[in-house]
Image (tube, rainbow, N blue to C red):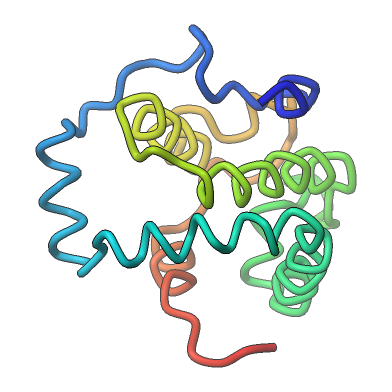
Length: 155
């Protein structure tokens, strides 16, 4: 967690994160609906050891995919000219990499749930662009977020 504190805008577990309106009871129902159980948590825990040295490779694949799809890249591009915002992409990349590790190690408790809410707000008009002071789109369209949950093949 000490490394995460060095990442600008990474506020997991801090007072800067508000409580999620999703209760732990709601979260249990969500996990049930997604068939997310003890075996998944065990697999994620095991993945943490492998992932710690592979985060950059995972991010390279992810960023390559986003960059190759203009409709996805638009959420990280300038409103003024539509060009990708390198500093914004870099800041998001550092936080995303830490989130990968934190998710593999997560206790899936209130603190984790609160930070997932924070991440959601950063994709919504409520907080998008504020962490990095980016002049980009006002939100990430739900159609893009939702579709990315279901990977259909490896790239």
